Structure formats: structure tokens, C-alpha cells
Length: 147
Image 1 (cartoon, rainbow, N blue to C red):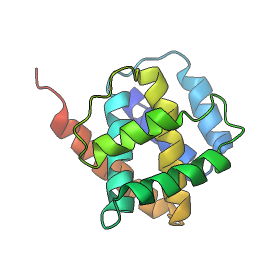
Image 2: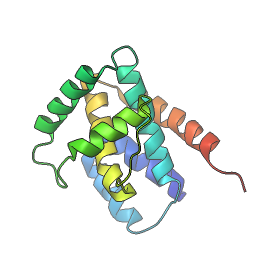
Image 3: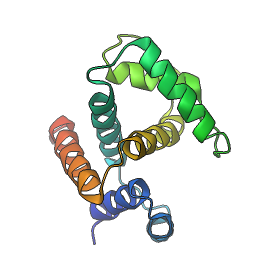
Image 4: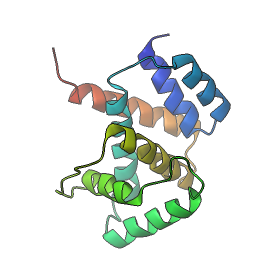
């Protein structure tokens, strides 16, 4: 199984609530790098945010969503950084503000948590998650620089 397939399987298990499988895949991956993993997660996050807020992208709706997320992830480690969350969501929704100071290590847990919440809120099925991951993979591939 390629690293790409294992990372995609890790996201699938995480977003469908199969945390035992996600943990096993994560342990199996260990420190195996896959540089495109950030692009895949960013694409998943962007598609999820766009789908959730396509007709309701006002600041009030985003603020309410983030307040719900703050409550739901109150015990998360690392803690959900609401400033990063707001910046990442606003970037997806078309805000043209700089996102200085958000490293990939800081963005990943925020993107994972908010994507998970969006999918849980809409009661996404395993098929919905698989389609989202496939669409995100296509989007990430299109955005990848060609050699």
C-alpha cells in the first residue's frame, strides 16, 4: 500500500469515526513523510468549508460555528486555536487577509477538527466521506506543481 493510499485511509478513518483504525494507520505510518499530505488535507478542508458555508458565509454564521466547535473540542489536545480556525476558514471563503504565523503543524489539527465537525454536523455517511476525499485528491493533484 503506497504512502498516499495510507494517508487517505487515515483521513477516511478519522472522518468516519473509526479511531482505532486511524490510530493503527498512524502508528504504521510513523514518521513516513508524504509531502502532499498537507495539500490533500487542505483540499478536504476547503471543500468541506465551502460545502457548509456556500449559502451562509457571513461572519455571524462562521462565528456561531466556531463557538460550537470551541465547546465541542474544549478538551482537545492541542487546544483548538480559534484565531487560526477563523483565519483558515475566512481564507477558504474568499477573505484576502494574510495568514501569517500559521504553520502547517498548527493548521493540521485545526483543519482536522473543523472538517470532522462539518461532516458530523451534516451526518455524512462513509460514502459521503469517500467522495469528499476523492474530490479533494483530484483538487490537490491539479494544484500540485508539475515536474
